[in-house]
Image (cartoon, rainbow, N blue to C red; front, side, top):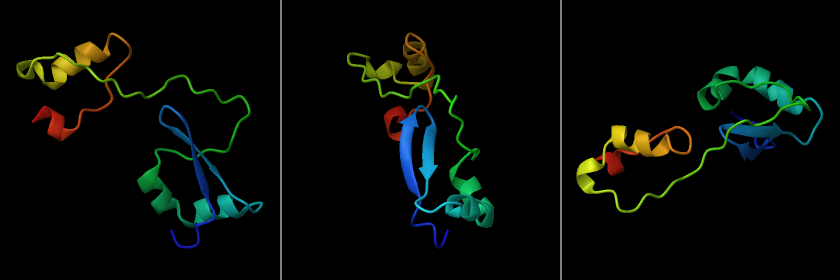
Length: 95
């Protein structure tokens, strides 16, 4: 992604980020010229819409007091279901 150092990435919430550029049209041009690289980083890239609303948020939840024998994905999914849905558990935690 050579020449893309002017792109600013801002975290919005959930799984969304806002890409912006300093020069008119430069961001769109970079996206078009580097489609494969952008596809490696993002599920999709769409133009900004003033009606865009983030419907979900990703949060870290610290759970204390869960016995080690219950440290498995199924247990974490049940705990997460109390407030939303489990996105991911790192391998170190599962091991």
